[in-house]
Length: 246
Ligand SMILES: Nc1ncnc2c1ncn2[C@@H]1O[C@H](COP(=O)(O)OP(=O)(O)OP(=O)(O)O)[C@@H](O)[C@H]1O
Image (cartoon, rainbow, N blue to C red; front, side, top):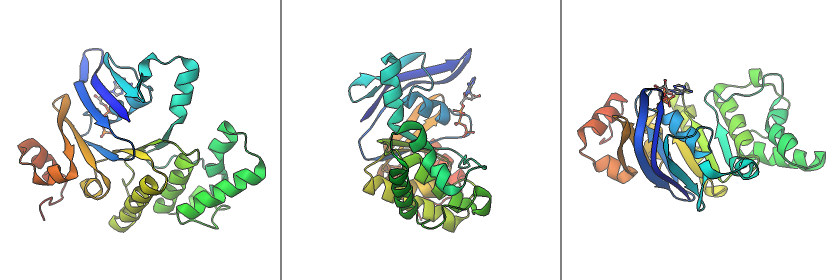
């Protein structure tokens, strides 16, 4: 479980948000939404202490991540996988090597074990047999799936998705949404999804955190979001061109 306790962050005189507090339960999928520049990325960078707050805590399994010393911090960070916006694959490596990269860097597995793990991962994202293709030979949706296989290859407890469906057509977005759901279920991953895609939020999220006015403006389940009469929240959702009540 991740407990976000009264986090406040500013850069110089620019207050990003203050007093942000909510919990992320094990195995659930939480979507972080809000307009551009509201501090979604800054917030997720606090979860694994890539950024430090002005005040507040992020407590994972009882320990404040901002208090961890080097060795523990490294271990904690290894519990996180990240799916970067735009996939961020290495163009010079083929699909197999992209997925194998974290294993070569962080594990002691031998070549046969790496091969087995990568092939299982390719199968999980429905890309069996494409290991020798280069990223340039893949469609946007396929690249996203390779990135997902790479992000989960070290079996993280927590997976941060940065705009997982941006730039994809609706059908391919749905394939990625489906994969995010099955990753969460099959690998028992706790997912934190930063997104502007409200359709995706309604499909994959258990709970939603809405940043606005430099604070956590609204927080609740997707069911509560559907029923909410919070005007700002509805305006934001409507502006995202999705008819939530349809
Ligand atoms: N390293 C940094 N140094 C200074 N200011 C920063 C830094 N990182 C982010 N900011 C500022 O913090 C604010 C929040 O940025 P952030 O990238 O978290 O927004 P966001 O909600 O993720 O935006 P988008 O939806 O466009 O990706 C912005 O005003 C940004 O300029």
